[in-house]
Length: 515
Ligand code: HEM
Image 1 (cartoon, rainbow, N blue to C red):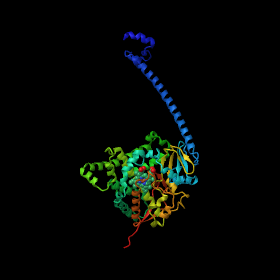
Image 2 (tube, rainbow, N blue to C red):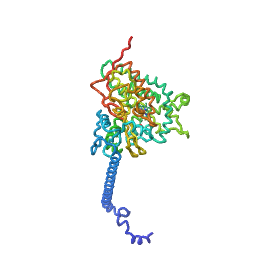
Image 3 (cartoon, protein in one colour):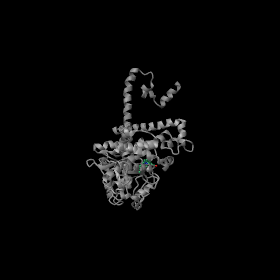
Image 4 (cartoon, protein in one colour):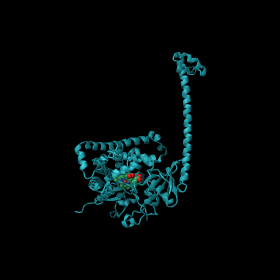
């Protein structure tokens, strides 16, 4: 190849002249050691230069796209007047998680007709709606859940029925619906009453102390116990183990999701991952997943024994886990492990936290009312267990009043504001059980009261929940007289479900049976 060298050198100087330390294998070692660090620092400087340049470009791009997004949102909501917003925080600084957040939203709901935009920071906004015609227009469509609030809970509950959309949602819903058939639910009444009695027995021991009792925690354990037994035939004994790690993890996750929602920098996955809150979130998710996996593993092991499979096949009604584990599509394919865990996590969360909220607030209403014997579980309209749901519009929408929203807008349907709207209810904030009498209900707008949502994405567990709440209330009333603790009124907070910052404290007085 030596004959080629002169030709090449006339076309281009030998590269070895430019980078001798790279190409010259005969290089004097002393020279190599002196040239190498100098050159590498030169290359490093060049690299840093380019990196800085790219960072600046990226930042400029980000700033411009955020600015454009803000302009677009302002245009989208131009026909919806709303509260003033801070130049940096938007409206988020008004929500301090101090028990007054829902009052703030409700104050604005009274001020602005039908709906108003709420800004989290200056680059994300959604429209809060509370007029039944608006709610009906949205729930009659098939818009997916928004990719914001539900996105934050997905690492926790996985992509189960609550967050799925499209064909996969439809398949899962079809698969799971038989698990909530009337005949399947019937035997659960007995199971539920056993769990409720365990709770009431505990209260009986606490009542003589004549000190207010924080009920929400007790009720959460009771509803967890119930769903574990009904849906998974799993004896968790969690009511007698009050330091239950799973319940603690659920509380922690509810708080952290809500916190992330409000803290703008935490909307970025990377920042959240590195933050102390992100660390707490991952730890709680791990606890939760370990719990779920334990439940699935136990059932899978018992299903391995043929006799058990036969027994389940012959059962007239299957429990929820049976349905999930035995489910096969047209190709004979079962649910993947990931899908299975997501559905179990979804039902464990949806199946106990919502009803815990429903039962606790109903008991609180009863303590508040001197007429508590007249009322039923629906009386907690003032305290909806799910204070709101969200959708991301996949098509533009036009409302009855002529206003419209484009595709991509996030809409928050506020059950809390709907149930307290003076235009829909007489004295909405007064406790009036007769509001739900059949006569009054028949006069109402079909979407004025939708605690379980409506349309195709309504609550699959509605009948289960109503049965559980009825059993809990019906068993509590003959055993205890409930009264408020005036020094510790609950402070409402929406943390996926309606909770209280300081819990729900009530006085319990045992009702002695007449001999
Ligand atoms: C008082 C109790 C309950 C209330 C107020 C309630 C309320 C709701 C609401 C408002 C939705 C719609 C959510 C959305 O659109 O994002 C929903 C969906 C759902 N609920 Fe409930 N729920 C309760 C109890 C339960 C129970 C006991 C279960 C299960 C055993 C359950 C399972 C679900 C599931 C899986 C979904 C998603 C359904 C779908 O999108 O197809 N819920 N619930």
